[in-house]
Length: 326
Image: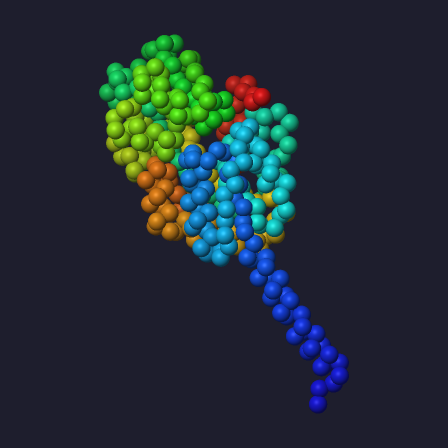
């Protein structure tokens, strides 16, 4: 016959177990907010929404996207840095996470110390494009042309600190050129002037340039990296024109606030890796000219090392250029 103490312990366990189960259920059923620190409708917003919709299937939690834009992404990023570290507020951000510390004075967060990396999501190549009537034949001819005419060539970008601005800086630095750089308030007006012939060059993500390239309104000259792209095999890389030290792609990574429990990070990372295996997600990204990373890169250590590399590569360039955002 069981002792009174054993009976009491059994009763307590029976009472506690349902409470524990309900508590765990409540935690896992909370809605996740994925902050996209740029305006709705752009490539970053579309990418974020694709991952949110795919990841919520394996997590069993609804994921909503919150566009908190401004100050080169730093406003939305700070929002996540200050959020409760429970895995229910996440940040999807691109290369600006690596560059903002060098461009924004007294940035109120640190990209490494205030966040837990979850994993890489995409790598979007940059492409050098021009007005459609630029008189060049191939990538080597293109490089010769810009060297010869550098003081007369205008190269636009989407604003100080933007991805296209970084690409313009890297390109001019790699070739030791002095372009006329024209800042715009976003990629759309820069692209419009390029299509209209008022601008000579632009370097931007394939997700924004691909539609105009496809209908022949602008001309693509080179991939801003070491190798050609499988999605655009006819476009040479600058490496083929013996241009070294020039390799930039726009990566998106997923982060959580610092001190988020490792078990939560592991769960989110597994959901990201699962999403990266989805053919439908990869196909939709490919149609935008964006490359989903291989599933093994959807891990914390991959994003951690990639962020470190980008900060070490782009930081000195930005410091040398003296770029500061107001």
